[in-house]
Image 1 (tube, rainbow, N blue to C red):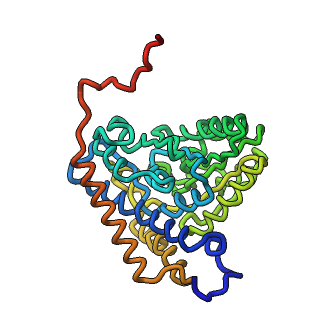
Image 2 (image 1 turned 45 degrees about the vertical axis):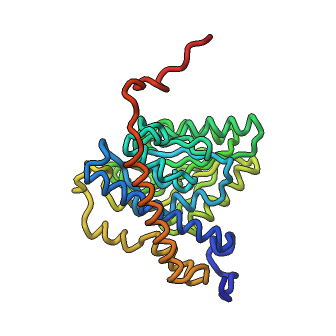
Image 3 (image 1 turned 30 degrees about the vertical axis):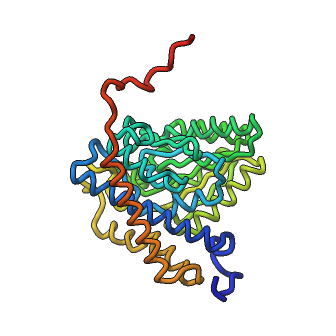
Length: 336
C-alpha cells in the first residue's frame, strides 16, 4: 500500500487488503471479458438461443459478494454470468455450458440462464423473473434451522420488484428474521420499460420499510459503495438480526437480450452511462491508493484475456452430449 492516509479512504480500501482488492478487480475484468467472448461467439453462430449480458454492471456482482464466505449462498437471475464469476465459477465450464457441451455446468442442458454451482454456494441462475427470491428465503430458513451461520445473498432485477414473490418473500424473511440479503440490480429497465414507468416508488429500497427491514440505495457502479452496503447487511444477517434490502443502481450497456433492437434508449443515455464504467472507476480508486499501478493493471488484463482464450478453446474442443442420454437427470431414479 502507498503512504496515502486511510482515514478518509473509501470503505473498500479501509476494509480489504491489497490481495483481496486485486482479486476483486480481476474478477470484474473477467466478467467483462467473459461476456464479450460470449457475445462474439454468439455472433459467430457458436452459441444458440439467447443470452442476457451484464456488461456495465460488474461492480454490483463483485462488490456484493465481497463479504461472503465459501459456505454462504447466492441465488441469481437470467442476467447472472457476473454473479457466477463473483462466486468463483470456472469460466471454462461456463463457456462449455453456453456451447451445449457435456463438460458444462449442467452438462450442456441449461445454457446461459441456468448455470448453478452448488459446491461454490451458487444455487443457480433463473429464467423466471423473481424466481430466485423465494428460493433464497428457503435457503436462509435452512441455514437458520441447521444453525450453519450461513448467509444467502439474493440477486434480482428491478423488474422483479413488482412481482408478487418479491413482496411475499420479503415479508416472511422479515417475520422470521432470516439471514438473507436482497440485492436489487436496478439497471433502469425491465426489458424495454423504465423503472419510472413501472414502479410507483422513487427508490426500490424505499419498499424495505413496509417489511420492517433496512433499505439502502447505492451507486451500483461504485465498487466500494456496493461492498460497504453488502458488508453491513451480511453482518446484520449473520448476527441474527434479519434481512436487508440493497438497491444497486447501475446500467446494462447492451440490450435486454441478444434479440433486443434497443430502440427505447437514446445513444446519449447509453454513452453517458458508459462514461461511468465501473471497471475504470475501480482501477482509478486502486491506483490512487497505491494498491496497483498501471503496469499491474495491464498484467491483470492480459492474464484475464489468456484465461478467456483457454476457456473458449476448452469449450470448443469438449464433446457434445450423447443424444441417447437426452432424458438423463430429467427423472429421479425409481425407488428400489
